[in-house]
Each structure stands twice: as C-alpha cells, then as structure tokens.
Length: 162
Image 1 (cartoon, rainbow, N blue to C red):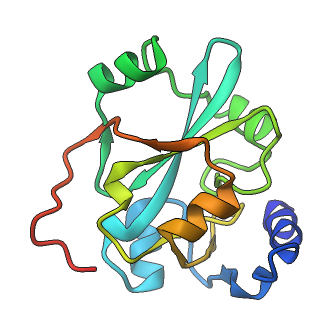
Image 2: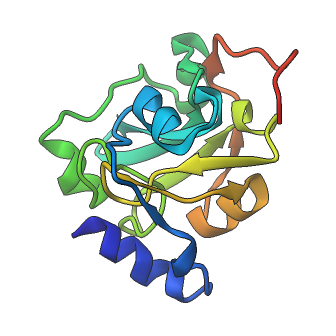
C-alpha cells in the first residue's frame, strides 16, 4: 500500500506520525479541502508529466493551473500528463494519491511558486485518503525537490488567507 511506503519513508525524518489517514476521499482538491476543513488553494496537488522518457512531478497550489507557455519555456517541451496507466508505474503511487514523497530516484520533483503564499500546505501521502500538513520548507526538504519553478496560472496571491 502506497501510504505505508510514504509512512516508512517519513520515519527517517521522524514525521511518520504526522500522516493523516482520512475517513473521506481526498483524491481531488475539492474532496481534500472538504475532508481537511481547509481552503482548496492550500491543497498541494502533485501533477505528473512526461518529459522525454522520464517522469516529472510538479507540486502546485490547489487553485493553480499549468500555464502551457511557461511550462514549455521551462522544460523545452509541451506539457504531457501521464496516462492513468503510467501514473502508478512511474510515480509509485496510485491516481488520487500521487505525492512527491518516496518516489523513484529518477523522478524529478519541482515546487511551483503558487504554494509560497501559504504558511502550510497539505500534500497527499500516497493514497486517495491521506495528507500531511507541511511548511513550504518542509515540503522542499521531504520531497527532495529540485527547486522552485513558476509554471502555473489562475491563482492570485492577493487576499489569500494563510
């Protein structure tokens, strides 16, 4: 089970006890926000893309959308999401539970700037009913992210509640 893999991964950092397994599904931003009682923008969704023959994960705020022009400028190719069949094979996690933790070492993880407006965010933990609350610094550390990028649109920093 993928959530168990993530909990095992988190043991090295001493945070496995912070993983929340929810009664209700958190497979979408809307469901996760409802289950956690937070605004949808604070859900740190993990989007999976194919760049050449490798998988790239982009963690973005729940209200952000990929900006195709920015994506292409950064990665040098058109945004192509993984298929439902490729997701578990390339990320190690099921659709609805994809997260940036305990992924194969060849998978690169990037964090989108849209997350920085929040003190804490809620990424999934490998299942469609799990989450963990992390600061952006913790997210960067535990996801072993390659860095911060700016490839999203449709989010506004003004008036957001941290």
